[in-house]
Image 1 (tube, rainbow, N blue to C red):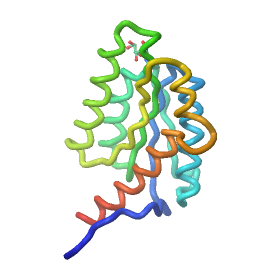
Image 2: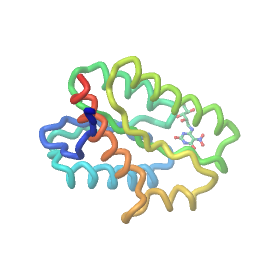
Image 3: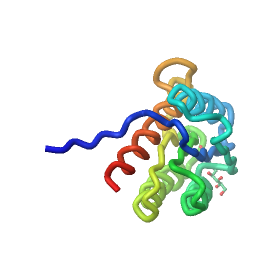
Length: 154
Ligand code: INI
């Protein structure tokens, strides 16, 4: 039996992060978490590019451009869609998640997903704090792991 598992070793990896500016204070906290997750696992800051887009709805098109650029080993997407703030929550949250999943399958690029879809600001704050449970940090570590496991499979 052969078991494939991706390590969390990000040494030498080039990582792209897509951030949406809507609810910027939450996304900035997710970005802090993502950078922490990357640097703790050996990704050097000079190998990280951060791209800002207006809102979560614009994350997929920027992510696809990065996924097809040939410049990255893995990507991380960060955003915050808060139900309390929009009647079109469903029209934003679902398509963004579906599109990111589709881009992964089309391009083979692993993409960490921390586009929060929450009921209110309190829930968003809970998931983007400086301690454990920051979804940006979790997505970044998952992105490294997936890049390594896909490399092993190829
Ligand atoms: N974008 C978000 O990232 N989060 C939200 O909660 C949100 N709300 O509430 O509407 C939101 N809307 C903007 C959207 O993502 C686009 O940027 C906008 O529709 C322009 O295309």
